[in-house]
Length: 470
Image 1 (cartoon, one colour):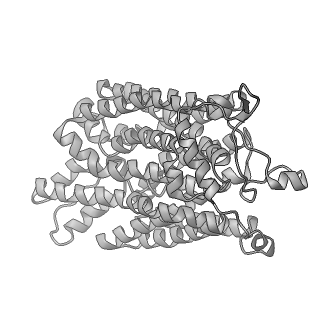
Image 2: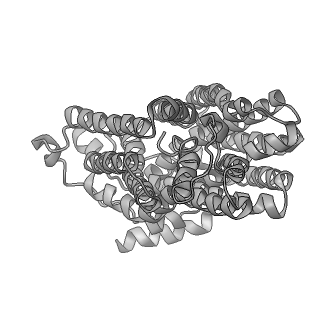
Image 3: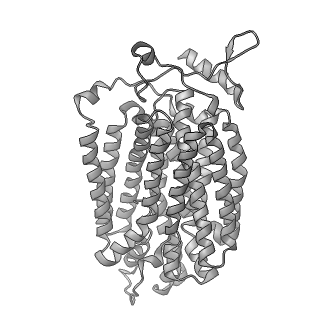
């Protein structure tokens, strides 16, 4: 919600600040008119003394402000991941919620662009800790499938709900209760969540401190060099690029192409929540029955995203466009729900069962798309055109789908029994069962055990040598 709630608020608010030193006749604008950053351009041109210069200046400021959260999140994640691995998940999550509370409160009362920028960037800092530790905590608390996929699917459903509901939520409160109200509400939610964390997880209790002897996780740079994890990270980035690039550009295109009303440009994304939740549900059910086909669900999602993105420029009315956007969000749900549990599984079978760094890599993948989108998309549309942008993004997803074939043998991997299992004969409990991991044994002709073949066999010696030296 923090990423998307500023969509209907900030363009109008920046315009008001721009006009403070040069008063002009004000015009009432519905917040739904300003659902995307690029959608503010025409209105700003009508209320400024120098339309072209003012519009470009404001669009640049809006784009940079939108991207600043993702940019700082991108820069901090390589540090927050190892910090979470070392500190467990409770304390970093509490730190992240605290930073989100303070930064959102600051955003609510900011009166100039510099303060808005600082508050927005701090939101990225808080998200780098809260997002990563929250998803990692879920992966740790649910170490077995299909419970892990189901729990991560619930989290993804709420991420979709927050992203799609935030613009109408922010626009309604901004129009009827003022700029402060939506941010005060979200700050209160962050504070309430932190208090619930203190009650439920008890991060500072004696029992929690007794678990402080954590295993040493694999360094994040080594996880990035793992070819399987790199393939998953690339898929997460590729699948989110269409959403990140369309959000700041599609409203203006709708107005120019189909003479869309302000209500239509504001509500185009909202119906996509239903297919997103449907995609999460379908992937969780399929993963429970056929867990070795997670790569296939991800590849199918990329294909759906590619086809939907290519269909967008061909739409000439509101209904077909909504169908295309629903397909886009359905495909994203397939990819995210299939591949986020795969990241945790890869850490389990190839590294150490500590999940902070690997989900920091996932957060980096998302942040790359959302850092580039508000800044780059407008320039691409201006120089090449909206149709070329959509077709290029669709083609990228279609071309990346076959790459997930490299993950087809991941389902053959499994964890060996940890030392805790051997000594206590208890099932693994996630984070605190750092295990030396191996692959499902297969016998050579002479009876010696070996690992199943895979597309990255040549990389195995590197990892074996690393663990031997360790």
